[in-house]
Length: 559
Image (tube, rainbow, N blue to C red; front, top):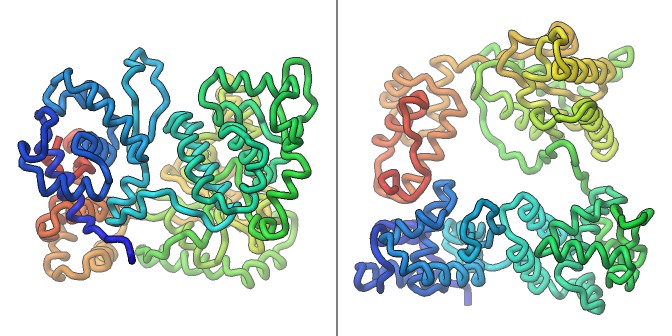
């Protein structure tokens, strides 16, 4: 018997009604709040009782508005009655246990430690959007490698402070139980490891998959342990040799020094169990440490609209980047600089980054996107090292992938701008970074694309390094109408022409408008697009000082 499907729109509308009718009200039975129908629907979907549901709906609303839940605001929503605090706290604990919420780390700002802090569980929102109770549960993964990926994702959330150690352990335990049939996990069970020990061992496996033969143990232990005290105890056991991971020869330490064990790796027998032939086949992946790897298979095909002169240049570039043509061009170019270097410059929102992704999709190339903001480092010499790491990683990617990937420096204004006279150590660092980048581009072999909104500040030396320079201008009247017709084919041409005359929108602004329309229509299915579109066009072109952003919650009227 297939699981019952729920209507997502009905669920969101019920959440909206519950949120509105519980505002400024004490927690009461559904009958007293005229919420019997909505509470029955949502309680069945989420498997929660009435107080838990009221609190959960509040968290859902705040999550959709990208707001943090604070104790004083929660109390204020439910009628400013402090007597309800124990019931609310108990509801939050229960929702965490049911995996509708995730516990956050304890605050160090002086807030009440007795009150549990939580965030909405991602599966709660996923389940609502799909109308699926099944989506609320921990999903089985296909193989052990996917399990490692799932556990790494949870550890990263713990590292960023999004979830607490308890939440991490709950998620990992759930993943291990759901996938307990994997032979790798059955092998681990014989050692009776704690959850922290399992996470450390599995994360060392993740590090191995990412071609990191030596892993920073204090970092891994700090993320895996429930508390700082447990982390210190764990490290002490490694130093004394009393850790089950060492006693069972599951991991090895590198150069253990006095009161210190900074690096470790999986032992041979763990390697044999984790990375047997079947898993090594699945292991064929490239892990990027300093860049963001965007795989071409994950880029969604989308039509892009440009003015005629730009469109012709783009067609030339796309043709040149096709593998047979690209290799032919590289072989014809003499000298050491066989790089295909491009500069995309122009107004924000005109499709520079979007084009890079579409070129990657068309030519079946992956993208290594460098985070130009994170290249800078306060410590002397580190920023220059980061530049070198990026190009070293690109060279490794060229060897790993069948086709040369694209190295993208997005919003590279600070890196390729005019060099300045040295008046401080910061100026010296900027010039040093630029000199290193210039040297790498001089000898570059591959595909390099930089985007910038400030072409006027481009240093002359960089200007000479770019083979092609494409200027992205705001779409003209004819192109804007094509974009409107593509996004809103159901609307009349005269209406779109009038809209086009009144609002000069870019592609990025239309994407923002579409997101707002999607939310409004999900919550108010009968609302007319003819009413929404002019309103959102006006908002998109309004300056921030004149326009208060529309909430992304249930309805813009809700507060």
